[in-house]
Image (cartoon, rainbow, N blue to C red; front, side):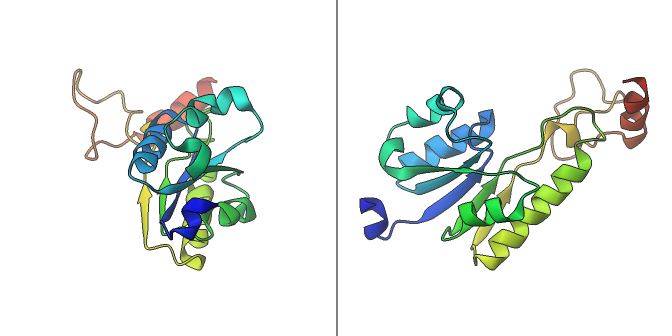
Length: 160
């Protein structure tokens, strides 16, 4: 790949096809980075079409099949990268079912990043971490000071 010969930095974006992650991909490509994006299935062209339509994607984007719970799949995507934007999150089935895969997935990303000697990891949290709280005042901006109510999440789990 010509871009690799020039020594440009590689950055991995987990969950690249997701809404927020795809904006990271677009910005990184526009800044001249080579982007390794993790997706559930790189062969599903319809779900990844928005990524391939980005400027510079054909030359500088490589999609990797990855699963947050599969360390080896993450490691292969992160290998050779100087940075990681961890934006992937398990699909929410219920609030409690997202916790274990999110924690293990993040642990896998951090471990793979450490092994690959990544310089910086940016972690993008899930709305589930801050938005599941019926006691938030109406109209309050949800930010890093907010937290989901664990008891509320448990109660909602019982109703499903």
